[in-house]
Length: 523
Image 1 (cartoon, rainbow, N blue to C red):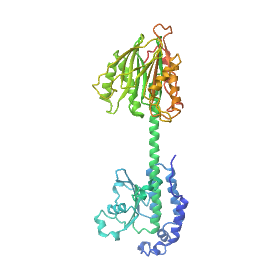
Image 2 (spheres, helix red, strand yellow):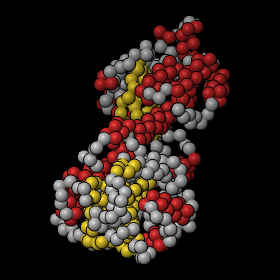
Image 3 (tube, rainbow, N blue to C red):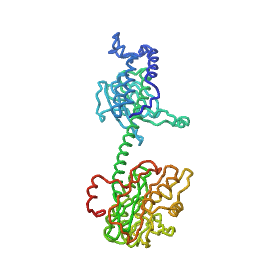
Image 4 (cartoon, helix red, strand yellow):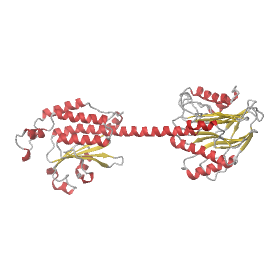
């Protein structure tokens, strides 16, 4: 798709040109100009050249330019067509188009001769004095050798050898509605390009009027090309985001371990195409599992990359049979040494053994919650720094006992920070109330209750933060269930917690065969 922002149709422009043409059927006679001998006489072809543009020729060029502005996304090709049309319309010997850059400089982009041949840009001669004058006035400027005399020669010449007239047209951004204030205030509009034409005979009034219209076409093409380039860049970024999201989702647990003592599930909700929250469950031994929920500062692809890195670090370092505070310390040092200064993350990392003992480190994270059988809800807080901020930070662990039929809920701040349409926050109080009123008996019931509770509270309002939830049900050592690998529940949500967006639980096709065998968890 390519947009057309024409301010005037081709037919309207052609009508104006026909009016100009009727007024100047013989420009040489009306302007009382003396023709060079080579052009004098009654030769009809010569008079046609000096008469410049019959209306059919004008319409043809305007039609070419209109099609260029709409259908040809390549900026250089489009500008080449415009320069060719300008040369043919004015019978100039060469034409040059310079594009304005964000730095304020002009870049020579296209140089063509009357035979539609591109000229080597480094060989093109442009009068710096004439260009400066046109830029200063921001109006069309026609300069002849007779006007400038020897002063122009001292100022880098009037142009290429043998050329005696120059026409320069600054091309400004089209005066759209958003630039009206700037126009009223008297400020100059944004410069897009400069059209520069050389000729061995004088330019006539029709040429100048025609090129004013051509300047509008240049503005259309340049702005359209910029929009098209932005569209292509957005499509490229969207593709990269899609790939990043696929990789990130595949790195989430494809299965949650199921052992006699534990029942585990979890889900994530991204407020954008990719998220900065992560969760994982690592089987450390037959008796112990590592539980991780992390929240990366920032949004988008950088946050998702750091989330994947953080997840991989815990899988690797956690397998070394280290206490949780040492695992977090090593991760922190790695991030401080290898990641940008503004990258950091809050996280909750815990090791839960089959007896119900929970050793945990809360690194600047929201407190995990335990729902006791009595209905009481406890918080697992600490005063540790987030990881990635201070390389010499010391991390301390907390320890608690999970009793039979207790529920552990680890989550990110996307839950308490969820807002409804009245800008009210769900808050930790809302989550505590949900746990107190939770009537279910399985961990799946708890995860679904959290998601449904937040969804009902937000009333479909879009959210600005990702969500990750890891729920654990401790069933005790004496539970008679057989050890197995429990599929991660396929939960789907979105930034409104309702529309479809793939989340945890999708098993990658290449991993299905491995899951059928006796593959250790996260081997």
